[in-house]
Image 1: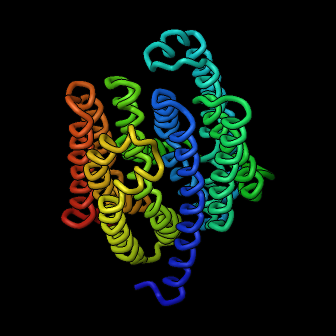
Image 2 (image 1 turned 45 degrees about the horizontal axis):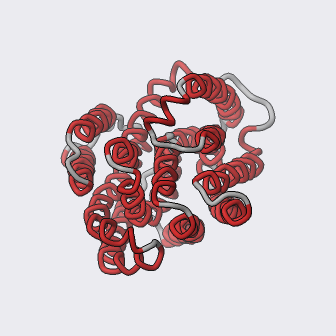
Length: 413
């Protein structure tokens, strides 16, 4: 059992990240209020699709991988190797982004037509924001792995402030369109990445040592696959809705999704604090009982949050959005909130398994992600059906994680 001091530290750090997430979330929500009141439903649907693409970027998976390597390196006194890992990874991701940008430029006309995007500038602001989002998890991971939760939360808050302020200035003084909102997204990513780089500099600057790629890549790559599959279950639905439904329906769906995904951001700090602690415990062969504490807290918050969203959601939709949104968004809101509950709990179990280098979940998570994509591509008769599919797959993920955690725990040598 963790002692009173460790419990107090866990709840203090988790509480700070929750406050930071809540503050940033309110400001992010303010951007959606701004968009819902000032731009058309079609433009809001475009913003929803752009943000869905940004969510697909494996920010959380990459952050978790680099948090794990940072935590383990600090526990074992191997800081020079993790510095080399971060710098080489940043160079590699930039090269990958350049290739992706070239492909986007080549197929720009087709992409704009398929995604029903009226302004090319929106696409290119998204691409520049994507560059920052690809770099950000390296430095957020360094902050998380070194348990610098003060500035991990601080950068999250800066993200919300920059996004709302710049989006408001752009919408009111330059253009009342999707481009104005995306200007805020680009500004927030730029500010956040810069702050995260600065406050994690003690981890990734200075002398470097060769990183044992050959030994650790068999663990890092499966971890990235598993976390990416989980993030895909969390975020891919909006992209499929954008492809198969009208721009207006996508806007209504994005409104419900914005409110429902707040449940994940509410409980995510618990797993964020738990993960590097479990990594350090595994690296130093110490026992930890943080899983039960994190799991119970996450489940309670997720259930209470979903119930509150179902009860107050219709009122919130009326308050935030124009009357056009109310009917559709309130009809699908309970299904959206319900799908987030098993995903919230499964996220804790996935973090626990991977923190202990238990990779048995990896192929199952990958298969679930692929099956989910195939299902949404072939079967999408209504917005409610999309959410029913999401709920089914997130429940499957939870059950598989529970099986490996309790019914068939990993044997220790």
